[in-house]
Length: 342
Ligand code: ATP
Image (tube, rainbow, N blue to C red):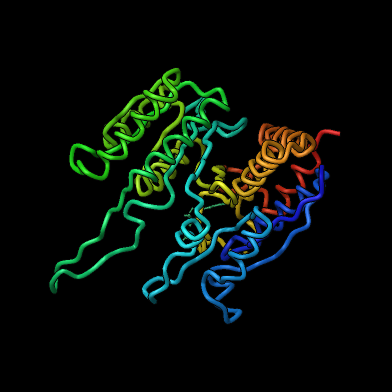
């Protein structure tokens, strides 16, 4: 693998535990990564910095890549969300969340294989809220044609690149005729004009959620605006074993930040029981991204070896408590390392 420098944000709560475990596995698998540590969230505040320090954003812009643990934004103290700031300020407009059934992890469903694409910069996450009059507050939902078109084009391009067959947009355009109406119109345009060979479907989100839990195998890729993508990501995590097993990437035209879908899980922090798999899978996505973007085939080969190793660990019933096993965070990492193919 070609040498590369990657910003590492350990994060808060279980973040430091799952990042350490992930780093151990990546090192054992033979990656050639120089980690550039930076802080965000409570850890940054404790160091006397902003919740989303400019130095962290500048480092990601400089190195182009980051692996990020979950960060906590203090509630009710006027801080705007670390994750929302990071995604907006670096223009990481596409959140990609693969959701697939794992060997040895038994749930109500088999053979789930979905990819969620969430628009990361607009919708109700504009953070524009005000008090119209005492007792009446409002929150502004923003959609722009350029951003809706950009995420739709990104999703269809991804589908083509990854040999996916169908994109389903979940929306509520029957109620939010302007904002969600624009979102589906832009997706229809990109489908009709640029990618007519990919199947395209629209479902009102409430009915779509019902159908997802009835039979997820009917879906392939989901395309959603910001808030719906947030909620449906956790719903889909529940189909395959929970938040401990869903990775994610936030991708823009210039930079990318890889992080698990889960948050900092303060209830289990510091106990060496968190599942590091979601962050490890995010790191595997990062290696595949490096392989694609930089033409580094070795990075792709290492990603495949790590995936083989964690699939084997799960098949051998090496699991953390959230999946019904009894291994701690460190012991699970060791089990994966022991199964890395030569
Ligand atoms: P935040 O406010 O940072 O989003 P949260 O506790 O509200 O944190 P999550 O961290 O996403 O929400 O997780 C919800 C619950 O799911 C946690 O309290 C924890 O019990 C469980 N959980 C989340 N991630 C993991 C993990 N990696 N391993 C095991 N359990 C997890």
